Length: 300
Figure (cartoon, rainbow, N blue to C red):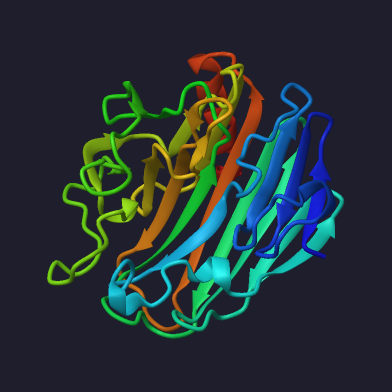
């Protein structure tokens, strides 16, 4: 079993592992775990690029990430991942300790009425980082040819911001940290990192609330993602990470997030909770209301 369907009265959510798709998902390529397909009663076209996925766990990061010494920068995509159906409304992706970084992880996806997907991620390091003292994870959601590629967040003053960088990586200011992070860093200044790395491409802007949102497709839908933490979270955006749609003459942006632990060693456990809302767009006040519901949920 490589994929399962979870559904509510509005959502159809296909969760899959790293294997290639088949039948209705024959175009899905290997190496893209997470949500293979996200559709709604209000939007029948896949929110994500059909070749790829959303909430795709793609990087385990340490000081060797995005260097020639790192060997495989996409280790979570390439190591086997086991899909388990937990109930009619939930499924998990389990990955045994990976060969390079020794990370064991489990991601649980659960759908809730009428338009909610909850994600719970847990990971354990079975060995210390290969280099450096920190460790991180990177997820990508490859958005299917939206009219507007921008990814939105609220800055330290609560003002609405839009991320639409000029480039993927160096010079793109692709990664935004929380307002509590004054001087962001990633990796060893003495090493040379790949110029296309989003995780090393810093924006001077900062976010306040741990949320991101965009308007997929023709702009009538809302894709809102909220998180249960602030300082360890980094949000990122690539204007063209999912390639291009020549038929629609649009790029497929990547709406991404990262989770970084400053001090990591053998036995370190990482936990992250997130909620995705996929519904009709009803304005910023609706987003604020949904975020309030999320904060009450994680506290309760």
